[in-house]
View 1 (tube, protein in one colour):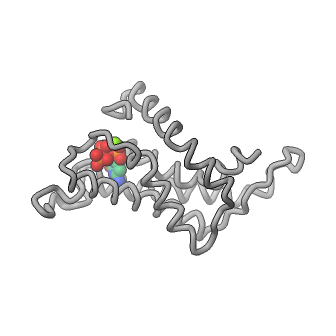
View 2 (view 1 turned 120 degrees about the vertical axis):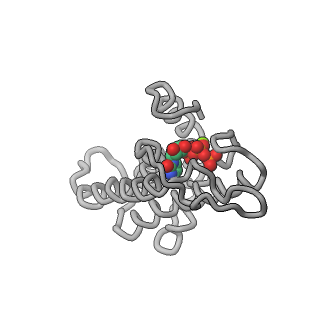
Length: 171
Ligand code: CTP
Ligand code: MG
């Protein structure tokens, strides 16, 4: 089940990336500073959201670390063994990628919340993979699956967030 195995590995990054909107943060991470005439990050990247996202990603990842031995053998899954350093790097990496993405969007003159494909969907994934690379590099099949399914999952989760009114835009 390579699909399940890929999702298992990236779960802390997904969790970290999807949680910030729930924090309803107020304090802009960039301190409202400007860089080359544009907002550094914009009001969509808050201190509360960033910290909450990282902690939630680590929380989910640690549940995996502590309970992975309980996944029944009969399911036939070859789950990647998760460790605390992997969990932290995936979570911090996901938020770092999201933040760098906002920096790039602002420098290109795009407003907060404006759609940027594929940066919005894949930026956090690329950064999470780069951050975790020093301690773990998944196989090529896993990487391909992640790059194929992440944009779709990102869109579906954002549309859901929009439907239940926790997100302003359906992307
Ligand atoms: N959010 C946050 N802190 C973060 C990331 C996200 O508080 N580090 C919250 C913000 O309320 C943000 C929402 O989650 O508006 C959705 O996140 P995202 O789509 O990444 O931000 P955008 O508002 O689209 O802003 P940008 O154009 O900079 O990506
Ligand atoms: Mg957005």
